[in-house]
Amino acid sequence: MSDIAILMVDDHPIVREGYRRLLERQPGYRIVAEAENAAGAYEAYRRASPDVVLTDLTLPGPGGLEAVRHIKQWDKRARILVFTMHANAAYALKAFEAGASGYVTKSSDAAELVRAIAVVARGGRALSDDIARDLAAERLAGARSPTEELGPRETEIFRLVALGRTTEEIAKLLNLSPKTVQNYHYQIKSKIGARTDAHLVWLAIGAGLVNGDGAS
Image (cartoon, rainbow, N blue to C red; front, side, top):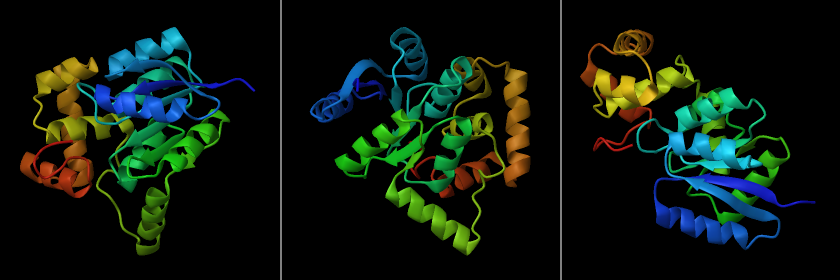
């Protein structure tokens, strides 16, 4: 059996170096390309044709959800594993909706990440234990996240608005017209019941899309 060829996407070189060393110590795992943002991930995918994309969600410019969506638009067979600090069930669901095959948090142990890559490479779906527990608890409690009514593109714009990005900045990042972004902004507020932009930010914090200090 040939090695699993991996494209690793993270904006921190030291993080990529650490996980490259971890994975290449495992028999049958090989890093064939790296990228630090969504645009670089798309170009690297087209160039390297990896078996699995291992991507963070928090990237400069368009976030990881946009990277997932863009790669899947180009290649519907792409196998993408999200590997992120966002231990949030709602965000995991949006990653799957965008086209990801798996979602593992960075609090997971190394063995769980290695297993998830193997599962995704075989065409399966992987979910880290902490997210699986959260999803089960939410379903049992009947809890709902404000992002449940939003699609992947809406979720990404929701996140960018909550981070304080202007309409023009979001339009440039996502290659949309300012008018389209404004329409999305209005639809998002309506769907999640946000009365003001300040309320929208509060809901984003509650959903775990951004931290209380405005970081994502």
